[in-house]
Length: 396
Image 1 (cartoon, helix red, strand yellow):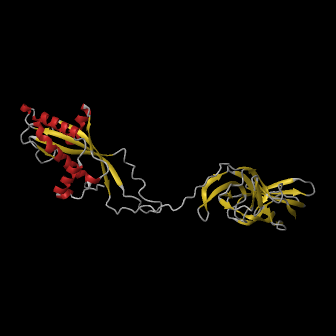
Image 2 (cartoon, one colour; image 1 turned 60 degrees about the vertical axis):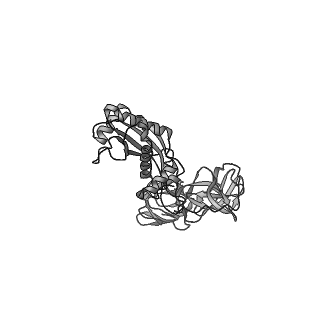
Image 3 (spheres, rainbow, N blue to C red; image 1 turned 90 degrees about the horizontal axis):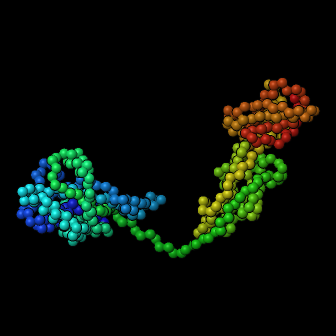
């Protein structure tokens, strides 16, 4: 594959191709050069000048080398850039004998008869030109093909007035496509052969959760460290998949799984009080020995449940303030809102006291109870939507 010398090699080979065929114009002493039309060097007279005025990415090849590296960063192939070369041909000679037009016709005929750069000519040019030796343009997979460019009068005017800023002479333009340039890095070795195949098929049955309840008592609140039961359909994975439960971004392994229910224990102090989400995840176990591949199977939609706080038995007691102090599990996090509910044993009347948002995480809470009448009360606490079971009474 060609390297960084390829553009110059393409230009020099084009110059040589035209020089070998310029004699068909019948213009005596005509030369072909590769100079800038507005440069200090004089143009050939009579002759043809080849000027590379623009280089653009090749649309067909621009992304053909992606990716060049594996996920671990190792190189899998040489980086490659694919370019199209835009050439302007300008013609100089005696107007009285129409030398410019004769040479224009000669160039057009040459590129029509030789639409690609011959590999043999590229090899000769690379060998005879010291600064182009080793360009390897002759070994690239694609041949460099020439196609005429059609300029409108406005485009031609802009090219000469803005880019070249010299008086117009007879000219035409061609695009050479494509030049493939690669780095000189060591070619990566071939991929290791596949010794065995492990083809896995799995029926598509999306798990659906219809309900979540406390395993000990379906009517009871779900507290910290409780075991829960997920009810639904298609909950059991078909081998080689395995079933797991994703609770608020924590992956849990069930203790029992069937097509309609999953039993799983919530680890203590793993989740904050309030609304939690649960999803059934059925991931494939692939390889030999089988290894779990997360994200390869199917996943149910998210279903919510509320993790309720639990008041530690014997902890509620009246303190100066007046206030009620008590301990809850799990720990209440910063910013969670606490509301204390007191139910009179004598009248069954309920009173609510706002404990506000916590400034620091704590399990020991104190809520002011101004105007609370003396007596015995059942105690409950509401924290971010999680309502605790009734606690033993507190006497005020």
